[in-house]
Image (cartoon, rainbow, N blue to C red; front, side, top):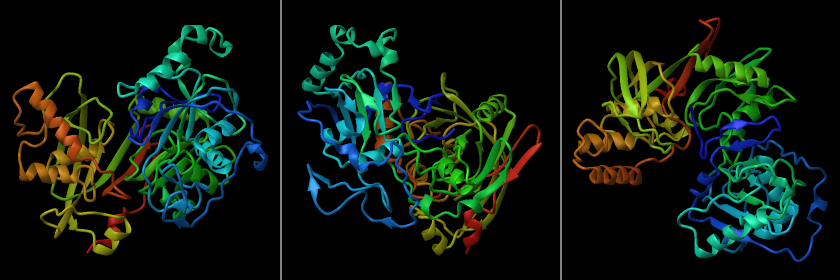
Length: 475
């Protein structure tokens, strides 16, 4: 299953998405200010410019070079305008954490607290970039004394006991975070807000002919040939620029399609989107019961032996994923079957430029290898990590190819590789720390990986993607 930053856990019947572990939200970015506690002196009529609670954003095809900016700056940040047109590059991340000191409309409070224009905040809410919790989550160990003081102040039992909104809930239940879904949503004093001011953007969404990517439309589902450089269901801070949203619009559906499974943003190919909540649950059940079969095409930089490859993946949700050939208790089993491996030309420079493919000075670019893979277990980054561990990284994979090159040049660099050198636990932890510090760059658009086939119910439903991107530009 794929992920995007701060993994989405479930979709509730009221339309909110919940993040299962609010404390993890504190593992944010250096630019974040963890708490801002404001007292509003007056109520500005900032909602007058908004005609409705639902802000419709046009699907603009144009892009700008700098995210959400004009030329002047405020508090070290560029002055904000709107989220569209979509920037061609993602800017530096910014996440703000607020504790509401006086109840009122959420848009008004954020505008005043962060000095942001109303239409920009409305865009953030429409993108799904604003969250709330009834009770502020526990701050991280790095929190300042002032932040700790504010947390203790707003979560004191004497304060919480007076809030009728949390009666009957445990503190842990009240700390669950949910998306803000409309601009007039009321937030009471003591409510925690998390604002992703710079959501992750997906400019590729505006370049795609989405109707041409539809493989099949059935009564209960749609099969999409997902383009590389897009997110299936969105990220924790952007559910607007997603395959589910744009495919729904392309088909003229009034009810948005729902995500049933994930593939990585940099991967293209078959994904199944449910038209109803009921079929979403049904398809999840088929995945659990192993009734769904997925085949992949991988373009690797070196040949891969035919047969089953087995590794074990470290059970920590951090990329790049660490894997080991040796069994390690508690680690996830990863199995794939290489069914075919044939030599093909390396993609030509024109197609590499189109899909932002980097070669990272791989020693030989005369030829590549196209492998057909049967995925036997479905772990995040599994194909990418396993092939890289075999010395055959996927072409263009900035997250795993540089690590494979480094291991080839200096055997034993990988903390859990075949030639690992450490002898003590402290040496192992040091090796892991160095590994993460050195590797893990996210691909810009595409890598040589396609979900080429998907089928379920013993082949009763069978679908194939179009020819992969690299075949159109082989030298």
